[in-house]
Length: 444
Image (cartoon, rainbow, N blue to C red; front, side, top):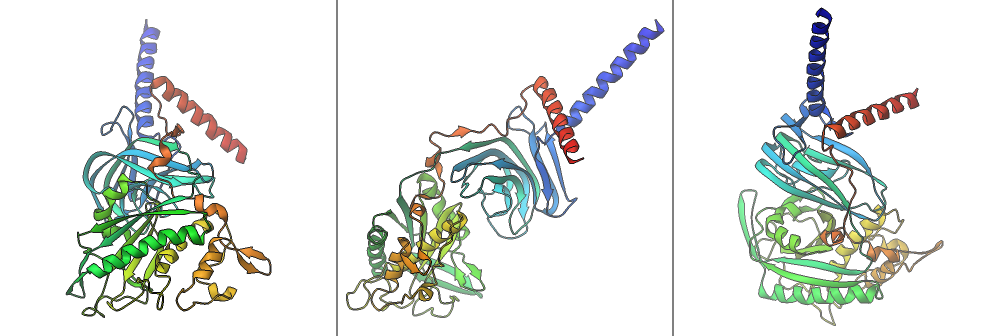
C-alpha cells in the first residue's frame, strides 16, 4: 500500500514536471530561429501563447530601450527567383529613435536594406508582405525585426503565421515605368518657407520627353527592351526633402510614400521616376542642390527609384527638343534608369564599366546629343577594349525587380510550418535534440 502511494505521488510529480517543461518549451521553442540584437541584453524574445493571431504561439520581441532586435533564419533560395515572405504583425508602443520610415516592426533580409513596410505605434494584427529577388544569392537571412538598418526601435511586436513562397521570374523585357510629376513643392528650409510650382510649359516639355524616353529605350537597346511609361500628375505637395552631404537636398522614397504607395500597390511597375521642381528664378539659392539634375540607383521596396529635377531657369532647354540646341532631351531619364541597370548587373555578379567612365573608353559628351553614343554601346555590350567588348549583358533586360505579378502561381516552401498538435511538438523536440547532438558530435 505504501509503495502504491509512493508510485502515485511520483507519477503526479512527473506529470507536473512534464507539464511545466512543456510550458517552458512552448515559450522558448523558436524553431531554429536565431535571436540577435544590436545592443545585447536589452530585448526579450519569447513565444507568446496569449497574444497570437491563430492557434500557434506568436513570436514576440520586447525592447524597453531602443534596439535593433530580430528573429532570423537562413533560407536556401534559387538564384534569380522572386520570393514573398509574409506574416501577421501586431505592435504596442513601437517608436523609432529617429524620423525614418525604415525603422519599426518589419520583415527584412538582415544584412541588407531590403525590407517590407514597417509598422509602428499601437497596431492590431495586419498582414505584411516582403517581396524580393534572390538575384545572385543562394542563401538569404530572413529576419522578423523590431528596429531597422541605421536605426533603433522600442516597444512590443508580435509576429505570427510566418510564410515564404517561391514565385516565377518574368522572362520578357517589357519594362513598366511610373512617372510621377509633382506639381507643388512646399517645404521649409532654414526656417524659410519655400513654395514652388511646375508650370504648364514644364508639364508639356516633360511629357514629350517621357515619350521620347520610351522610343530611345527601344532604339538604343536595338530592341532588347521595351519601355512603357504611365504619367501621374500629383497635386499633393512635396512637404519634406532628404539631405545628403554629396548631393544636397533630394527626394527619397519616404518623402513621398504617402502620395505614391497606393498607385504602386495597384500596379506592377519595374521603375519609378519622380519629377520635381526644387527651384526657380525667385528661389535660386534657398534649396541647396549640389550640381545634380538627376539621381538614380535608389529603390522603393526593390523597385528602381530615380529623381528627375526640373531646371530652375524657365529658359533652359534641357528637357526641350530643338534640332539646333538639344536633340536628346531624354538623356537624364535614360542616364538615371541605366544607373539602376548598372547596380542590378553588379548585384548579379557581372563586371561592367561604370556608367560615368565614358571618357576612359574614348567617348565624349557631344554637342546636341550628349553621351548618346556611349549609352548605345553601353546598352549593347559594344564598348571596345583591348580584351574584347564590354557593357551591359543582354540578359540584364529580363532581370526585373520582383513584384506581386510573379506570385500568380506561387509555391509555399513550408519552411515556417509550426507543429499542429502535441504529438508533432514532441516529435519536433526529439528532431531538434538529435540534430543538436549530431552537430555537437560533428564538431568534436
